[in-house]
Image (cartoon, rainbow, N blue to C red; front, side):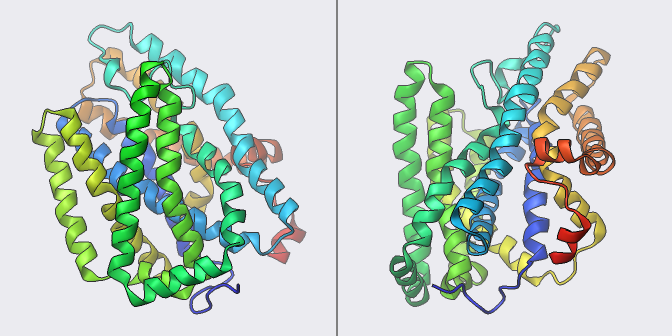
Length: 367
């Protein structure tokens, strides 16, 4: 099957910009995780409703774009290096350092570390998305081989766009509920991290597959770029309901159920807006390109950077809002300039933190 033509240039700069922005926003979200107050909980919840849905859809789109440009073995090798080398560095360095900082902060009077999203049993922490993308490598080849089914999905999306979105909604909700129930059993035997990985990987594969299909079939791309207006209306209502539940509902199970119901449709609606913005971007400013290129370094190292700054500031008695106002921009600037001034100038660091080789003048010209 040939990829969809209209609007499928060799390089879609808006996709790069948004992929970097979605990763970098994780730094702000995880700064909000440092305090258990309602406003910060709502920031986290808003992110969990849509941020990674858009990210994985873009990842699936780029996977479909790149897989046709190389031999299968070369694509697999490059893909796994890009994912598994930074993952290994993160698990060997960033995660242990983060746990050391959390353990030391826990000794500070009044520090409530129990609400942090990272606990001692969490061996992957924020690296889970790299594991998910690595597991999606065989999924990419499976999707690539399903020409007829992908085309049939495109025809269905063209004829019944609202039914297509509803089907994705039901699939995402069903997967979330089924894996949540399975995860409860895994929690009993102490496998919380495995339960989390299972839930995330299963749920986000629908969005990854959607992005893959959007590159290959024009009708699917059209659905993402111009879904029925009812999708946006329902998404707004469910997002308001979910955020209100965070603020006023104490029952954790009820809040989780509302979240599961809202998440697929809100995620789809926001992903649609991201794609519309990405395809409308005709020019990429240098700072946007630099931030996009630095986003993997920022995301890989942002948790120990946040915790390190908190470790330095906590004895001063800094409050949660002041901590957010200081730690988020300082951590972002430190990691951004660390990438620009150090990482991208070093072939070794670029490989270890980004899974990429430093582009030579010859390869840069070829691109």
